[in-house]
Image (cartoon, rainbow, N blue to C red; front, side):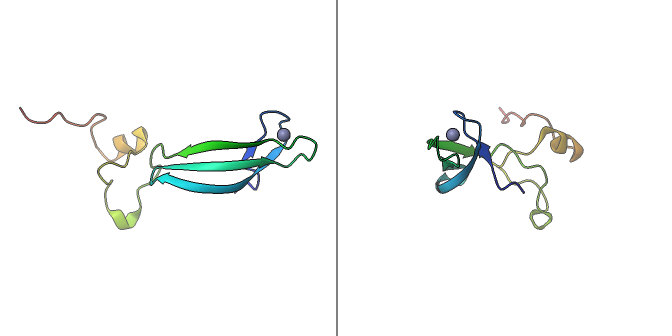
Length: 87
Ligand SMILES: [Zn+2]
C-alpha cells in the first residue's frame, strides 16, 4: 500500500492525508497536506466508492445497491443491466 496516496497539483510532490470524514457510507471527504515545505498547499478531495472488485465470501452474493465490477457481474452470470420492473 502506498504511503503517499496523492501528489500536490501545484508542485507535484507527495501529499499526505491530514484527516478525513465520512459524508455517506460510499463517499468520504479527504484533506491533504503537501509535504513540500516551500509549497504548503492544502486541499480537500472526495473519495467515492465505484464498484466492488470482489464480493466478500461471507456475503455469498452481491448486495443490492452496492455496484460490482462489470466483468465480475458477467462472471457471476448476472445481467449487465438490472431487469425492468414487471408491468
Ligand atoms: Zn505542493
